[in-house]
Length: 313
Image (cartoon, rainbow, N blue to C red; front, side, top):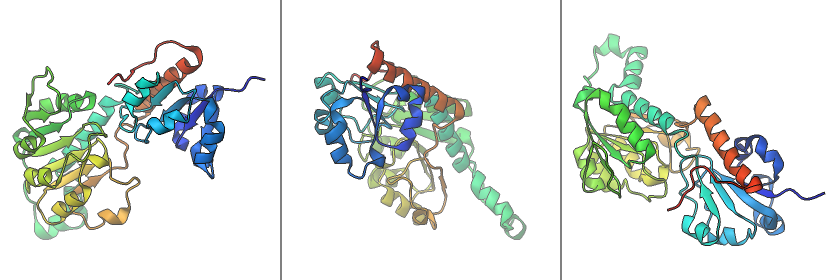
């Protein structure tokens, strides 16, 4: 009986994301291997595809250990861990999920913005804790129409966020490395955007490096908010926590963290922060679309044909 082609998986969730198509592969499940390096040495020769979250380090060294590899599929929009030039140099196709969950991530980002600016969580606590009875009304919030929304990274998700913010009638500007034909003003740098905005929404690529530095956080300032739906690594998390605790940043809404799962004690005494466990894109509908896109792309490794959302850069 002919051996099945190999599919390399890093996490248990990836087996589910492969859907029924995963049954057509010999699955190399690295999390189950006592010695993953040895498992790759023994079985890597048969691996034709990798299904990954996009953040795993998939570089030239790993590719060279998988001589039959022809496809790397990131199940989401991110592919920051994949060395795309190295893959292309070896004839390996890289694909992601494209726009499959961009709208859902944008919806979540707007939810975090509303929670912060409208003070939904703090006002809920004010009522439940007896603050309304004992202290009266809390400090007034700003109108959404008075906000200046700075979008850091205007890819599919960043653009979807900007489109959703337009009806609130606040100002919108953005920064990204490449000019785009959009109706919103592009400022000259990250720091310029941070100084201009009252809400900095981080939606750029996860492999951009730590672009929200201590200086950027200081520029957003004590009346400003930061929302992050990109990756935790793009923000100096220690500097942000210090700014929140010292009142040098008004608040933050975070769906992603430097370490995931993030330790709960890290946030126990941090004020004015809304946290969610990296679920911005995890709606029922989005996950179904992501599974469909992943399965369709994996099928090309077996049956040929063009992949969806091939990454060329």
